Amino acid sequence: MVVLWRVTAEPRRAGFAVSRQIRGAVQRNRARRRLREAYRAMRNAAPTNASLVLIRRPAARRQPFGALTGEMHEALAAIPGPRS
Picture (cartoon, rainbow, N blue to C red):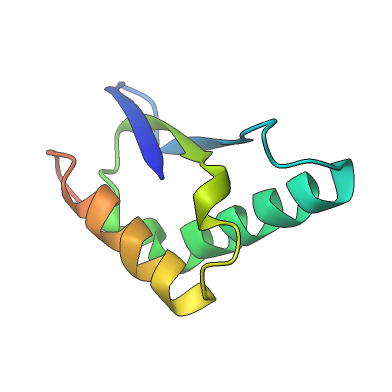
């Protein structure tokens, strides 16, 4: 997973992208839905005033959801800034 971020004056917002190397629209959409749901579970770990783009790599496609949320938490917690 790759997280790109930028500090903003606006409230936190997030965008989600999935690599086109994941073949088939159904598989890409499923990966994007799982990424969104993991973000919802770990939203409070992200800074309050940041714009985020979360990019999912194809190697993580078969990753269990618990591992995905753990990886998401680590990535979001590494971003400096105030939390809610």
